[in-house]
Image (cartoon, rainbow, N blue to C red):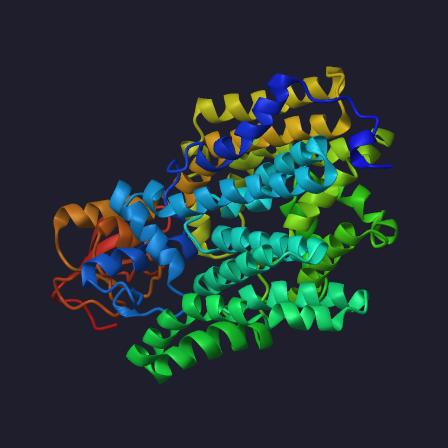
Length: 522
């Protein structure tokens, strides 16, 4: 049976409008409501700010040191946000928000062409409200942009495989090239391998080779990628090879960087969590893998999703957002199999539990602060949890939960629409109060210390402390070393010496101090 013939109630006109507005709400509502989160947001934002300070828009530096973590495109786009909004959370997060919005609409457009308008609306709802896309689409990092470009590349790859037309194939080379300027080789690996596996499953090896080695496509790819990579190599030489290619690509896959390890089943657990509240619909769609592989586009989507999970499962470095490179096909497959949700109410459990946690978070954070869990630095931050939780926080989190419980019990709508309602509530509650509250708890002291240091107008040293967002708010490079007598230093409160410093600011786990002349050397 085709999706257009599925016996589901059709959304009303106001519901269609609401679904189309979801991406704008999800990725723009209070986008600047929370301070920049360290380490990643702070590092990307400070590297962009230093481009202006140095007058160098080909290389990136972080607190004056080379930063080879990612290629240049995301910094250029953040630079546009900087020009529009200044050194603000809005400015640095704007490229990711725009990418998240376009990612959602691109998913809707692809679904409408192949599965019908109702399925496309469901796919749009999933793409714009699932927890993982929501998080990276509001973060000043490269991940939302890369996910958009991977989706566009593979959508156009399928259009070429489906029809044989060359135009979508050439567009795919454009998206892959921009992806390589965003995060490196992964932008080539995912589309290349997914299309290879699909063609191999059909015995079409020559077709894949013709597409991958299309002369015009390779020229397009080279014109996009080569100029900046050649410039970076010419400017930095072996440092670029060691830093970007070897450390942040080869070593990231073959070894564990920055302590980000995990078991072989890390992403089996991560995927359902990243797709909240659509976990139930995801599990329902998994039951149809065997039947789906008999159809071309659904086989392609499953190969895409499974390859990404498998590839990063064997990687030495594991971070939750890596697996989102394979989340786009899951948005579509969840939408395709949304009918199955009418058979059970189990899909309502995940959104209920997730929304129920939000009002309890301040108390949970406070309990962790009083325990021995984690480091003293983070426990000091968590002590702020109850004080930062305003009446508005409890009103909106509890109100969101009650609204969902009422809808789940009383609203006579298609099951996927009910989960979509939970997802919309989740977005509003998270963006409206939960993320700003968490930002105030975990990053508020860093921002306040940075703004205070900026007012003082003196150089500051990072003393056994790494929080790049401090430099963003101070709007100055903060080198890492031990301070000399009379110098200002930002440090962790749990690392303060017993004497020899004048504490100018202390909140949570952060302290801004001045080193005294008669202090002992450290």
